Amino acid sequence: ALLATNLCLLLCRLVAIARAEEWDAHAVPQAAPWLPETLMFLGRAVVFLAFDAAMRSGARNQAEERLGRCQQSAVSALLDLQCDAVVELDEKLCLKAHVPKFANMLMHSGGRSLGGDAL
Image (cartoon, rainbow, N blue to C red; front, side, top):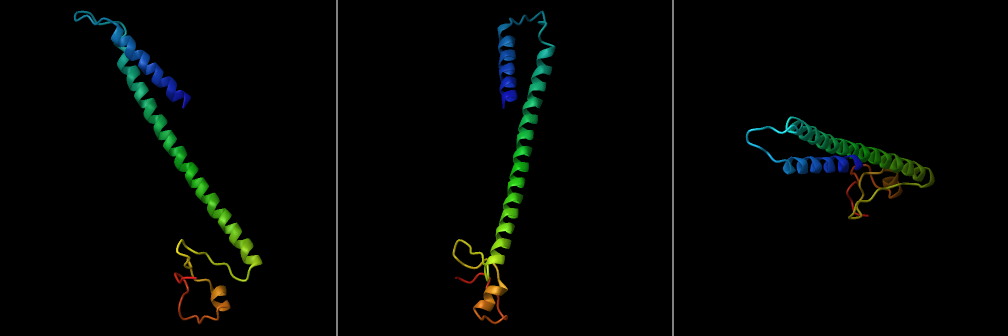
């Protein structure tokens, strides 16, 4: 963020210098050859910084998602050791998936899945 801020300040200063110089129709100022190259460099730097930030954000999101799945798996394994049956419910309090241990506790026949049934 600091680099982007400094690049923006440099760009503003270059534009101010270019506007402050008096452009003579017959003479080309000494600063003219480097100004387009500098502006192109700054443009590329801004694009690179935006791309870098997007890539870092995507990588961070993937790492957090993997960590969340790992933590959920660990909690499920601990619950499975301590409980007779572990079920996951959705926002409507319906079973997310069929759990054979839970079906056996309810003495439910194996012909139909309990996944999606309301608790």
